[in-house]
Image (cartoon, rainbow, N blue to C red; front, top):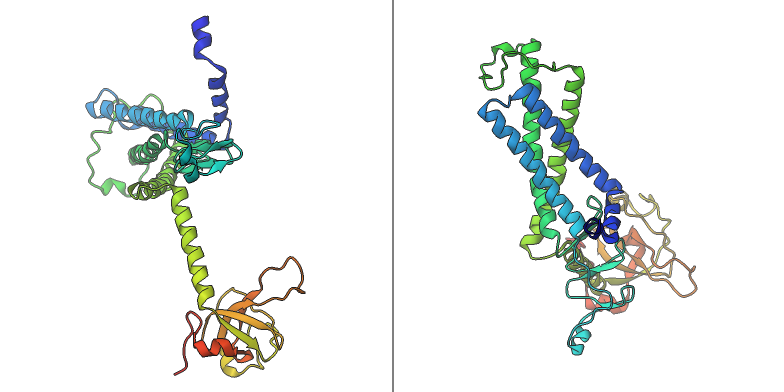
Length: 357
């Protein structure tokens, strides 16, 4: 009794709650349906166990299922590796290089991030995966990647079993001109006939399992491809996202540096194709979902890019403008504005602006 209680601890029972989530329920359901139907179809209707090929095929199906479940539960229950609560480096001077997490009351280890779902700082955090209802990080990233590799391979094998089962059974029962196809089906033929007939229910279930297998192969295969790209770059998903965000902010800052200040000299109603601004302006209106902005004479606007007869920019707002509106930006006709004297001297054109020839 004491040994039994030492194995089943409170912490282990708490971890079992991870199974009570839509992600693990769907993932385990797909694994169960595909594996069970592949074994049933293989034993009853496609490849008998008393043949060498049938035995090898059945062992491979069991092997796929065991390896997929092993890596899946490892990724779920082993966990990503959390930074200990209240952790700080041994050398106190190193704290100047680390961020401090107010929630965990600890310093963040290098490449670690705080997960809002787990409410803990995760070491080398990649992302929080809903399919395992846990974070993917330092300790379980390898198991998670192996699961992404093995799941499509197992589903491809299962899909082959489903296709061949339906083909071999319909080959003997229905006549769609298939009797003219010269295919050696000796490995799959049975003599005598199977005990359980391949009926409509079996056909529908096999077809449903085939759809799940193909869908899983495509979806999980794409996730595996994305993970491998990140791993080969020695980065995590969060680090890649941070780099992309920094690049976007740099591009926005460059646009602001190259922006040109204009003064509005004619009112503009914000119409998509204004008739009173000239025929060329009417027919060259930008084909985009980006908005147009209304202009009033005397206002100022910063143009960041433009076409031959149109410009795109941000309106310069004064302090008396309505609170809660931080930016007003959009397209407006070039005919309605003129460069401010200070910007005209620098002779800088907005990004993408086409000069008249």
